[in-house]
Length: 459
Image 1 (cartoon, rainbow, N blue to C red):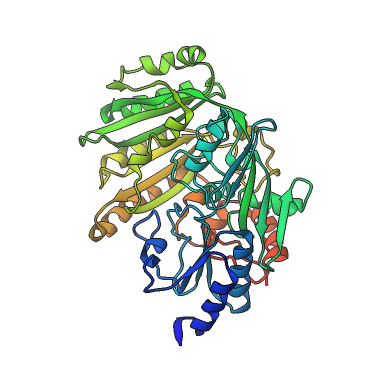
Image 2: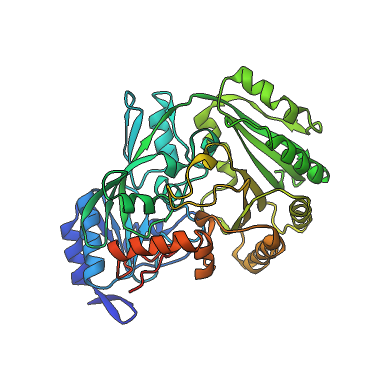
């Protein structure tokens, strides 16, 4: 009996039963008890109904699911952490490879490395590495998946100290479209290794990541809060302060709304060094204003990693836009301050993520992430709870993006929504995009892995 149709192709009960029998994990279908929970992702705006969800527990399960999707021409999506704003972890009427049961993290404290499965979150990763006083760059929200963040580049609190998440990759284990299990590193299939460091999920299902770790335990972190009336002055101060900021310091700056409804500008900081030196470095930033609140204090790195989690809970309506800011000019500052005044949701924000430091010292051809000379990544974050208000809040985010477009360039692939192929190309530039196409032609010539910010093969 047919269970679902995708572009004229029948996903039959027999096909799914055969897949279920070939897996140690389970295959969920519409009507099953856990189906609705399994198809829910972080962005509550995404409401897709796959024909089946293959909840994999091993690499062999992933291989079986890839082979079924390939052999039967099924639309295929891959779920790691399910945190992507575009919702590409789910598809309608096709097959989802769900890695959420594959979350183990194995740490080698002597080699300072960690091997982590493709369904792990950064909370899973940080808990395991913190036991040994180690960490690597891993986003700013602990519920984010390791896989999605790393494959798209991986901005995070430690990036100015140690580079982005993708810069700390030593190798990956990946199941490609032919069903082969490959190891990619600097010495094994280096073209594939280059591509997965910024090229997203275009080249296969990464079932294991191997990361380089660094000694990190206590950081000086937290938030400085200023009234929005001081936003222009604060951003200009940030511009000057940033010119001499050491690599140990990363600052994310948000134009947002406080929990009590007050428009604010906040400096959210992480100083990855001794507390004493951090106090000296941060003294001018803490003296500016003065702030309404100074919440900076020594804290475990894992506490900083989860500090913003409450502001980005599972299930809200989410719409993001993103671009890179080469210089924080007066025109950019004035535009951001003006757009913040028209914000339509108290949960929405404009976030400047500071780059530079070790991010900039990686060569432009070493990875597929190319926007290393920018001073900031600008994230236009639309968040709200009522789906009936979608049009209003999406219009605000799009309006902000249109206003800043003359002053920005490129885009961060991890923050892209459904914005068209030109925007995907803008995430890489023509030369890198064409190089990614060559890798795609080799490992996925039929574009099996296309539920992503897609690198289209020439075939």
